Image (cartoon, rainbow, N blue to C red; front, side):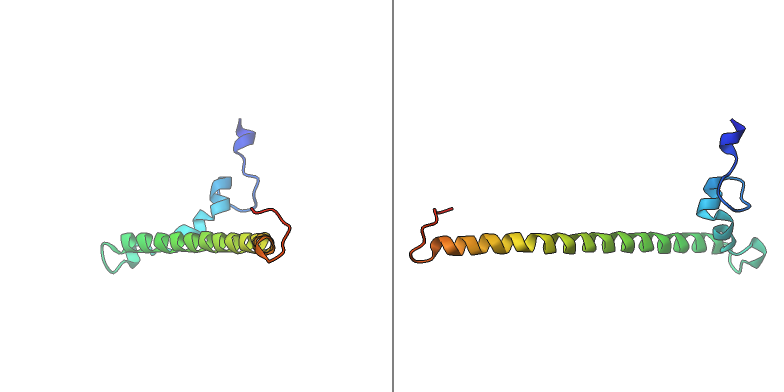
Amino acid sequence: MDDQRTPILPGTARSDYERYLRTEELLALQKQPEEFLHKDELTFQVVHQSSELLMKGAAWELERALTHLDQQRREQRPHRLAHEWLDYARTAPGSTLPPS
């Protein structure tokens, strides 16, 4: 069981979770208690830093969604043009195409 708990990722943290998330570096971003200028400073930092991370994640997901939508539009455009042309051809004078 100990072999499964031994970290395999590079780094000095005790677990792969901590190494992957780089928790030592992340937690070092907050001031130490002796540096606080106000009793709520840690709470302020944690709330605002996590908000920034959430906004970064939301921006990433929105960018992925927009890319996906653009790709779908590009793929569907030829089909839409073909259908529009076919509809036009069906209604053109002298057309022998059956109505849709």
